[in-house]
Length: 122
Image (cartoon, rainbow, N blue to C red):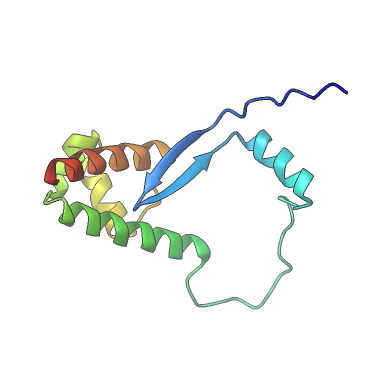
């Protein structure tokens, strides 16, 4: 009996605050969810308005807290980290205050710059 050859899955990884995440194309994600029986397009039924933080606000706040903690732990100012990550200081400031959600490219730049700074501490 011939064995089926498995295809390689193209993905990238990013590590934020010691947690590794796999980033795959949306089409691959949708296919995997379909095989697992998970509906990615399902919408929650309308509910009463909630005054608590939305999941996006919570994620934004957690990212801001982790970024601030790691930056200070690495002994960097906002200006230093922004320069190393090649992002604007204003952008970094808004991210650390939880006022904006950065795109993946910006998160990646910040993570790489922080990892380099943390390695120099060791």
